Image (cartoon, rainbow, N blue to C red):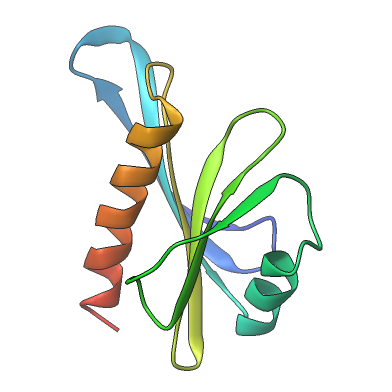
Length: 110
């Protein structure tokens, strides 16, 4: 489904059931953001912990919010986006690995 993201960008969210636990649902989210918003967030103008992510696009970082939710923001040329993968059974490391994989799919198409 289409939505306006937290950073004002246009995004989509996909929800899918956890094959290991049918009572839980996981969510993958993609939000197209302004490259300026990515720079501002990377410089700490938000909540949470920022960790640079090397080898992804021209610039990228993982953000972990105070609640433990993770996201990966990526810039390639004049385009930027944020992806997040969340679920009840996800650890931070699992979320970040899946976010990097999802970002790779997006980068291959822009």
